[in-house]
Length: 401
Image (cartoon, rainbow, N blue to C red; front, side, top):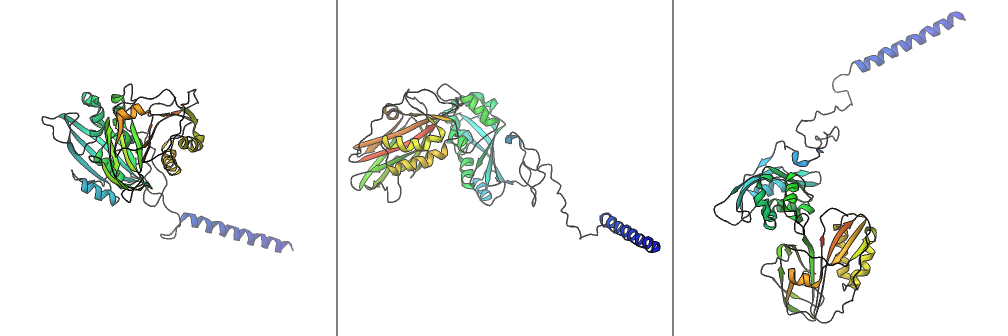
């Protein structure tokens, strides 16, 4: 009996010893092609932040605080001065750059600049660098300039070129079309806000152009929409008298809009309203207004816009745009630009003259807390005869109070 027990123990120890040897050999020797472990890729030193190596999302380099400090690795398609090449490369999802020399008439200088566009996740990154600024002898028409639009409303840039040369802005667009438009049109207050532009070029422009009425740039009037409701199908001429410049329009505004409108409001059998955006040289705000909690804006618009004269369609268009456009804040101070200011700085000239004209252009200022402010008296307008309605707004761009 004792002999059998010893024999069984010996066999068990032998089996255990063999199992250990087999396990050690498995870890010590792994024939080529038999491993299932994926090796961690070696990242290139020039990898851009948040850009993964093909096939992996691991081990990204530390995030760069200022995107303008990025040096771009190849391959980057060099398009010279050819913006068509830049557009084709961008549409094809390739990195591409142009280096251009263009006159900036408002500065009486020649700008040498570089614009680079690259796909960035589900966006497009547009890097704009002012390489040099030199005085010009003649005044040819500007075409493609980073500073052209900004300099047109801020001539102080001309006397601060040392702070602009060799500085860079980085912007992000959602579509390649927006990226190309930004590359061609250059920096404007609207573009800086819309495309979240950052970098030392932006900081310096804001510092140079700061003055009492405009904390950064002159304000941009966003999406004024003009609705036309004649009593019968009518040919209508609409012109804008803006103390500033018109940035965008649809349909295209040249010497004015010459359209045919139906009583339903349909314009040229196609448009619900005439659209434009402008930047004003001056801004004057009334003392009266409203302090509205951000989370209550939706219901506040439902109530107040109807009282101010908008119909359901116009109110919904307004809300669809501004509820997305206004950044989150605790409160908003909302003021309505008065008729005298609109008449002097962004007048509507309409032929034939409307019987009823309703113009609602608001100024939105984010607040950290509510503040006492006297609300204006609302007199609901009666819509009679040929009616023209406009709504739009301006977003305050200084620090939140």
